[in-house]
Image (cartoon, rainbow, N blue to C red):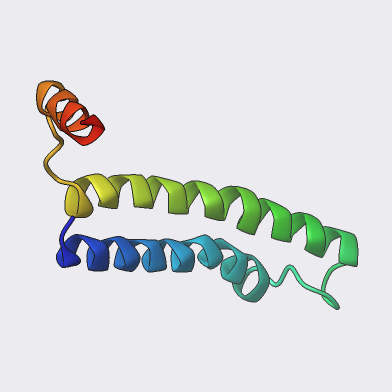
Amino acid sequence: MTTDSVNLFFMVAGVGLVINQLPLAVSRYIFGLQTPHVSLIVENVADVISATIVGTLLATVFRWWAMRKFVFPNPVPQQEFDERVQEAEH
């Protein structure tokens, strides 16, 4: 693994963190789903749905796509992988 791959990995992970928080920001600041505009229960339910469910799904899809596209673009063929494993075992 090269230094470029490591840097790309951390960049993709960082963008994933931002994407994870975007639905929460939209829920709170654009839709106004925060106290005192709504009850505490509505705020908490909206936070769970937007940040935990929607944010995590969006970030996971982005990370999967970006890792395959930029960080690990060339998958190792199975035969080469098996050879590398055998070499590492000896």
